Image 1: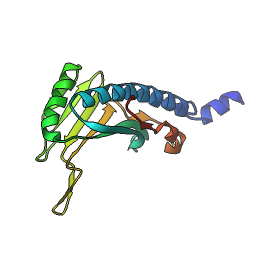
Image 2: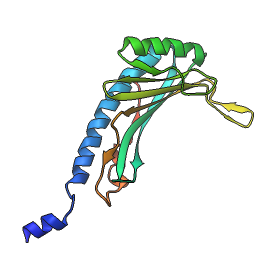
Image 3: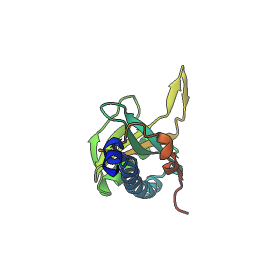
Image 4: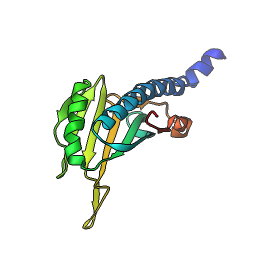
Length: 169
């Protein structure tokens, strides 16, 4: 009977393994987020805050989930401060992979230790109106961040990993 249960149980251990892997990803990304708060402060950005999210990253050939942190900060002149941020990231070991992510405002992609950091300035437009022109947004994820989950695994089982991340102090 035990063998039949094992055979028909499919990948019953996968959700626990997926959760463990997502927890490991979260720990590495959260640690880098705390470091980034310091780099942002040194570049003159204020009111920094972050929020982690767990998202579906793939449905085929197997379902997958990923963990990412989105950081926002404000600045008096984000375009000028972006240059200082870029220098700070480089001196912290980040390598600039792209010097633009498109658009008219400064942006770039950086990588370090299997992590990818996308940085954008300038907010966004709705019609002719610009929103968040004084904001900087960063998205931090793992290069190999899509974790396989067993069929039937639910994102709700790992939503508790999502949280607000505040800068120190």
